[in-house]
Amino acid sequence: MPNHPETNGNLARRDLLRTATLAAAGGLLFDKIAKANEVPAPGVKRRALHPEGAPAADVGYSPAILAEGKKLLMISGQGPTDKKADMETQIRQTLDKIGLLLKAAGGSWANVVMVRHYWLHFNRDLPIFRKVRREYFVEPYPASTGVGVTELAGPDLQMEIEVVAML
Image 1 (tube, rainbow, N blue to C red):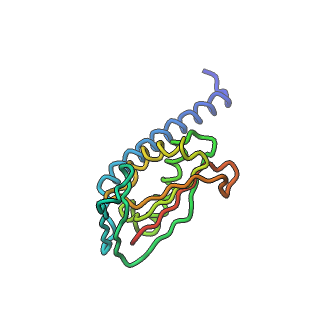
Image 2: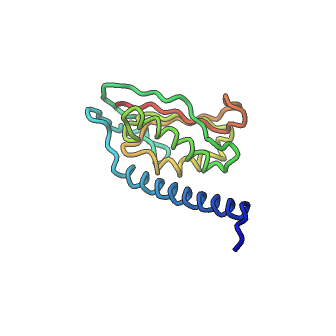
Image 3: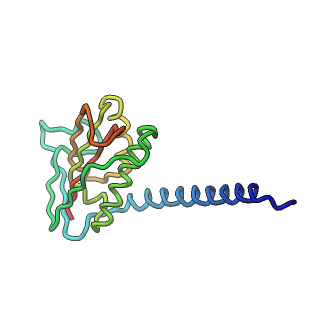
C-alpha cells in the first residue's frame, strides 16, 4: 500500500481519539467506584438534620447539615466547559470541575456541606440536576438551595453551581 501522509495522519488521529475515549471512559468508571467509598477528611464530622416539619423536598440533599472540622472550603460558582452541550453534560462537567477543586484542597464529595445552584431555566433543568447529583454527593447529603435567575456572569452560561465543604 502506498504511503500517503493524509491517510496515515487520519489513521493516527483516529487511533489517538480511540485511545483518549477509552482512557476517559475508564477514568469515569474509576471515579464512580471511588466516589462510592468516599469518607470525609480526618477530623470532619457531618450529621444531617431532619426535624419533623422540615423535610427534604427530594432525595439527594438534607434540610440541614451540622458540620465540624478545621477548615472551610468555599468553591466559587462553576460552570460547564461546553456551554453548547446538553444540560446533563453541562451539569456533569461542572460537578467534575468542583471535584477537582475538592481534591486540590485535600477533600472529596464527602466533605461538601452546602451546595447552591443557579439556573436560567429552573423548571426545565432542576429535574436533570436532581438525577445527576446523586452520582456525586454522598450521604449525609449536603444542604442545598436552587435559584432561578435571569442572568449569569458568563456569556451563554445557563447554570452555575457553588459548594461549601468542611475539611
